Length: 528
Image 1 (cartoon, helix red, strand yellow):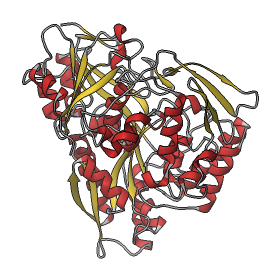
Image 2: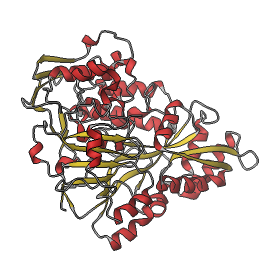
Image 3: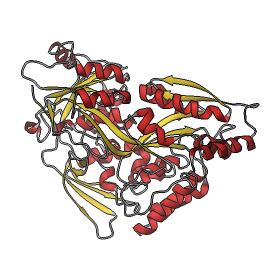
Image 4: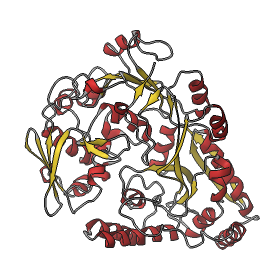
């Protein structure tokens, strides 16, 4: 565990029990949900970690208030005629928080570190669009010089792609594309992320990190536009109990909460009008089924469980915030994916008919009232996840399925999923960039986020062929073929497409609902 000393202790002396900063300073108190696993951007996996990392680091590209990519550490870029080579010019005033310049070599170092198989970065595959990135990450190429990232000089970075990639600028806003300070890592090694060692290049810098409690930041005076920041720092509170978060918001302890119990939505609308933000965004809530273990290696069992989920009641009735039922894998409205959404062929059947077909499928697999299927259903601690799990367990009961519910904190939950230590488990995915590829890769063989270990060579071939296609219509068709195949085999069980659920104090301005639910502090103001 990493604890705070010196600079952190000084910051703590200036703060009150409620996290209100020193007199005259404007501090944003933000309920952040899960516990942050690391401050190293190449060791992250959750949206709660992205909120912190995106404040303290900045990539070549960053997000505007609507979460659209805009230049960050790069002041400009050019793209070659064949759309394979991006050339980025870094800002002259790009600096680390210790005053050292951010150089093109820092980005080369960061991308090589991300893709080094010895570092086992979970999200490395998000940058596979870069030439030789996948082969290096899989150990097929051992020479890091072969990676398509080159420092032309201190302020010029050249990135060569495997093939034209329409979403690449969006992928560069992701924390896997953040630079890391080569000069500090070479000196401190793995200790570089300790609070007394870490240097960052974003609008803010961390000054205190107490695992299980919070991360505290302050303005980074070396950031090129620090004078524009209306908020002096953020306290990111770890708290997975959404009901408790709402109570603390009402008590004035939090300025923003990033989730709330859905059964409180009506109360919020009546009593705090305009403060609850519920908006559709690019995310999928789903159950992953461990296809590597019997009986879930049987597609009939997986399909039966999926057919028995009454999706139409979950958003409006179980949650009460109107999430859309999901019968396909890619959320509606994703870029580069025109045409009708992919759905399973039984999506329009009346629910009683779905239930009867599900019973028949389980019977074919050898299960029923006299031979019940026992399932352990895992979810990470959250009132809303519990509400959905209890409802779905009840939906499965008429099939002769006995469900044991098991909940753990979010870090433990996803660690167990990565290890394959589950039968059926709740998972969620929020888009890292605006392209269906970001969702479909979750079901590709060998991808760590393919928790259920479902594998299909034809599916993999379709994704690989789509990645190599420069014809956008043909690419979309290949991706739709892949999605259709995965849903036909019930590779996983999509349940609903997300709606973001936040509560924002009237003191806060600049908060814009967007499809990626990203709200960087640099764009916010707080009235005291």
